[in-house]
Length: 141
Image (cartoon, rainbow, N blue to C red; front, side):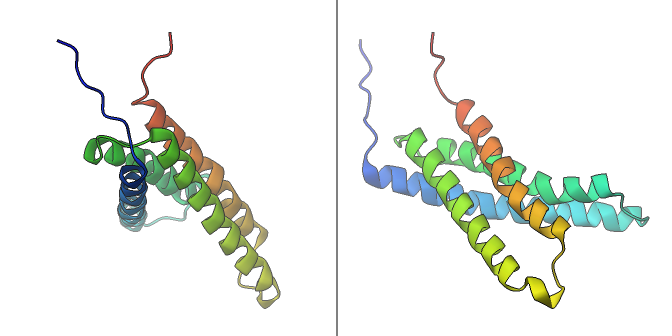
């Protein structure tokens, strides 16, 4: 017997995007907390490579997990809508934070390193989301 395929609708895709954003925030917070605790337990000076990893790993892990959670929770949604919507939100959020960073540049609170890491967070997060989304795409033979 042939299985009926349910077509994704707009509201289920919006729900998938909302689930992905919530999952991203939760995983981002948890990975940041774990990395902070590991650095605290280690207790020595952090190298620049470890510091860069601590800045870029949480967005990648959060984005990857957000696509997986959206797939597990929402059964009929447009994967492309969720991925591109999530990516657009990440880019918008990073762009706003970079604009605010550059507006406050004269105060001396931000360095070039901060701006570079903030700018790299968007492509790293989008790459993580891409891999998470591709994990559940049917193979195109």
